[in-house]
Image 1 (spheres, one colour):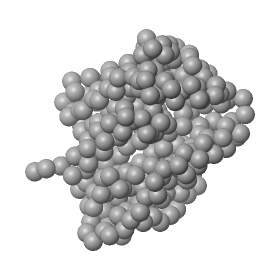
Image 2 (cartoon, helix red, strand yellow; image 1 turned 90 degrees about the horizontal axis):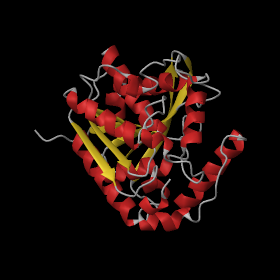
Image 3 (cartoon, rainbow, N blue to C red; image 1 turned 180 degrees about the vertical axis):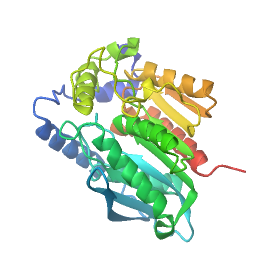
Image 4 (tube, helix red, strand yellow; image 1 turned 45 degrees about the vertical axis):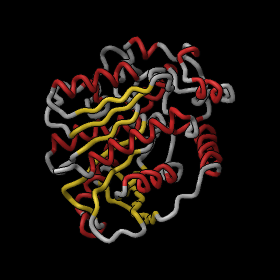
Length: 319
């Protein structure tokens, strides 16, 4: 990674980050990230006026899936809903670590957010995480009246691997034709297991999501060593989808120093060519998920404001 390309504030913040080997002891890594986000949230303002409740959702292909439903505490009418999927390279993260981010979404969108605690790889490779996400989306759709959700305004979204799951979920929902999804928000999505684009080789710094971590994450998710002969489902690796027609309107955001910039830009271009309304936002000097890791930086505040505007417009379309 060329550090000279980083935003100045992000470069200063990155100096304080330790190099990490997240794969040698994955359980310890999960605990470390939980502690990191716990400490980060403790430094942020308390979010008021957001109510939440936990549910268990039946999944035909596995055990019940835990979800947490967030809503404005003063809700008086049905609202659009966003099914939100956390990141973590398919291997890290949980409902609890995503709690603050989900509350931020409700606060800034004025919508209902349903956060999914999907099963993690490598213990549960594809299709288990996707099965959990689809089960949550199906449950959301079938319980709109109980949840006070406007069934005509259901969106999906996520961050990093969660955005990759959301992209795959969009394809799956389109193909099954059971649930209407009107919008997908893909923040720095992890969507191409081939890892052959120029930018996929550009980040090796172990203080951020890098090529080694990406290859390990894909191997864990796909449950196999990668090779040219491995052709996973497009639901697992959405960049492999041949037909993108009929997908919901899409928002994609990525930083210029993110190893995913090439695959994300290519996916946005292909969506547009397929006739899908697509907004692509590229943030100069941003590394992977910078806006959530260093939220006080000016570039992060600008990125978050852009995300919220785009998602809100997708959830509350005019006309």
